[in-house]
Image (tube, rainbow, N blue to C red; front, side, top):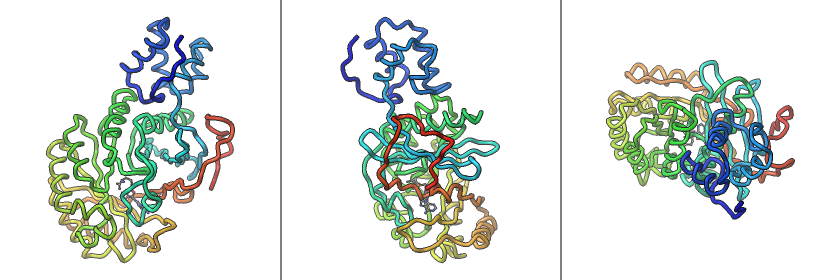
Length: 367
Ligand code: SAH
């Protein structure tokens, strides 16, 4: 048996790569074992120590060959367990966060695509913290798998994945696309249940448009004229609204999937009747018109302005509807555990006790 180093973590390998790896490293392994391993990776995911239909020495070798990329540190639970935030540490010590949201119809995982973010949106906690590095494919996929393990304990299965955690997915497009391949092909999620959310990185939108799977595209717009958007979303200076809308139109014609515009409502900043008119104008430039998701700004340490009060949020929604644009007011889930949109920062160093497994889930860490 060759005990030399093998590159890649547990979810970096697709089926072919896994078969090659196991063929090289464990040449005596019977073929049906590969199917068993695959099921432990994707169908009923567990850590290798619990792969009970495999002999213990094989499990131990597999644990070395397929190391975990995520070292779970803490879980925070809110809304009676309907929202769970996972804080994990990567091999190099970087902390990242993942959020699991359960509702009657859906089980959604919100994944991080980078440690930190370089986009510097002032109202976003991740943006305030700055950029550290891209996540690997395995680091992205394993976030979903760990959430799936948790969902299965609750007799549920992950149905949707949104790339709305830490980082800008379309600044890490290649790895994000590989992760989507794995989630679609290996975990079995439908492309229409996968959503990539971007601040408006135009080349990334074009790459995604040329990619084969019709995933949903969400664009974090937040302002509908360049002056205001340059302030709120600095990448707008590189990819102004006209270019962004052009890329959205091309995405639409390539995929025929409705695009959504995300709009964090900031009191007195982007919640007036003029803002509604400008936003409706942009939404209607796309055919079919973009769907607008409104979410009152969540509080973050580095941004003084508060979210729009709920009655004004509803008025704004009504104005958009009146102008022919569908809009939904989104709940901000997980605010109490800093797990809501834009609150993922994971700034504190993580101390892991008790190895690489989940901590006792009866004692969630409420920060
Ligand atoms: N970088 C990507 C994905 C991560 S952010 C993007 O910008 O789309 C996920 C969503 O949360 C984005 O729509 C983002 O604008 C929004 N968001 C960021 N900070 C927020 C805050 N403080 N309150 C509400 N939404 C916020």
